[in-house]
Figure 1 (cartoon, rainbow, N blue to C red):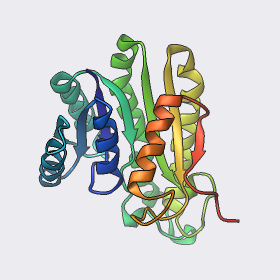
Figure 2: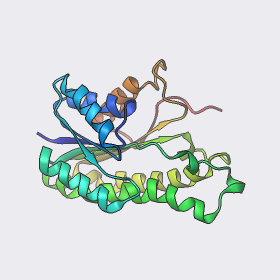
Figure 3: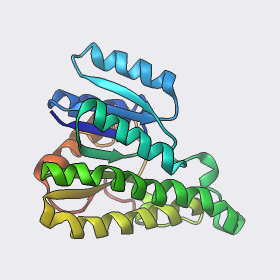
Figure 4: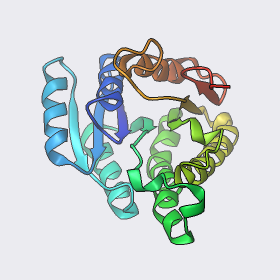
Length: 221
């Protein structure tokens, strides 16, 4: 049995994705900073018959990310699917004219160095399996930069470029890379952007292995 590793485990999209991939037979590694939240999610998933465990790591700390993913693979089995969808901090979203060089350090570490660290941690296991999926979830500023949220606009663009290059470079190794853009807010009542709908979409991206970039909703004009 293989593992679905979720970077950014929370009660919304994270829980919905864990539930969807767990229901498909994967063990679930919940990777986040908050161990108490992990315990609550693990208990909820266990009630549904899903084998899930929490692993504490900080996206801004590459060593802890690598250690968490290595521990998850050792405990649950090799990571076949990685979903990178942590929620950026509010202070990453300053207006562009108020954003200094120092302000960009944390967003770039979060959205560029974090994904690179995660991929390097799980790629050897995927290669050994002979298959794998890397899923990246981003807001609309990843493809349409907004002067009101400069940090995420710059950092998501870097993450998008990295993921797009992976899509091309890993295709021959049966490792699929896909990005899901969620232009607006994730809302429980949204037809296409509810946690459940997005989790279904992410599972389809894993199973169908098509193009790189996909949109949960059309981008506003």
